[in-house]
Amino acid sequence: MNVVRVGIFLVMGLGLISLAAHAQGDAARGKIVFMQCMACHSLNAGENRIGPSLHGLFGRKAGTVPDFAYSPSMKRSGITWNEQALESYLPDPQAKVPGTKMLFVGISDPKKIDDLIAYLKEATK
Image (cartoon, rainbow, N blue to C red; front, side, top):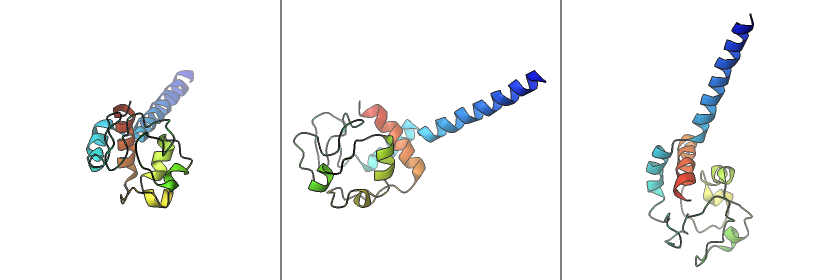
């Protein structure tokens, strides 16, 4: 009886691990999603384009990359970039930060957002 219970808990635990891995996204697919971003954003430190460099993105306060002219609304947004901030920003940047200079329609597919975040977590270090 105990062996059966242990087996059931093991299967349930493996299922939860699988769900957690799915929610984290796939960095390889995220690299493809990033192709939409790379016309405006660089991953290299100090290389600003139309948009600021994304190097060192995670943990950085929005509106603080040196030598980039942010909109006043982005500077005072209070956002610190992390997974949750990106999940709420990427679907509709103008709705999240009205007045932002980022003229991007957003990414509507949550899986693509998860994939992009997985890629950015690796590529922006």
